[in-house]
Length: 260
Image (tube, rainbow, N blue to C red):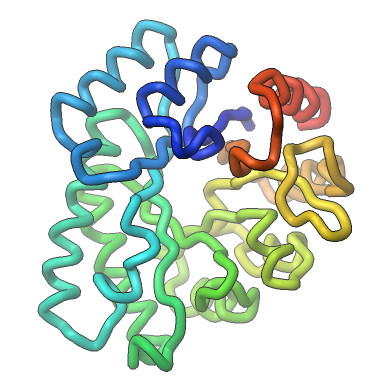
């Protein structure tokens, strides 16, 4: 289990600038949060790849900038838009493959009332999109996200039961807390289909802090993961407002390194 960081921690800094700073801080494992369509251009992707290659860094995952529109693009009852949306997401899968990333993170649908899809229809759509990802050697992984269908551990549990080995999940600790659930309850819902973790901390009245600044029991989390044979990584993901100085990111990394 390795510890990395998301470029989203430095948003709204440009992605390449965030990468440069984080590389200089000693980080070598990343999730890229792409923020606009031009960042999927081949020359831009090549530039990021060269920056990582120069420092011996690895990209584990990418996060689409269209995550907030997935209800509309992928999970509405307008079938043609779903077909077009899948073709657009091929660009993310191709980008991930070019950069050596293994995972593309999905937020999914906000609510059945807006989308008009049943749960089984949602799960079937996920499976179709995941199949396209596998053509590129990339895993599509459903993240638990507050105010989305995936916020509820019972939804995640039903998705896992329905899809079996076709399901893959990203556990985001802060998103579970924000939705009013114990992160360990969400962890248990994902079970052996958990492939990736967005790691952060929390305490009363603050649902997103750097690891080590709150009350999250990381030793307990490690014990669970080791017992269950987790083979993924930990990606530090907070917002820029959650810390004052860049050095706090490296301090958080060192904190996690002593525990995980």
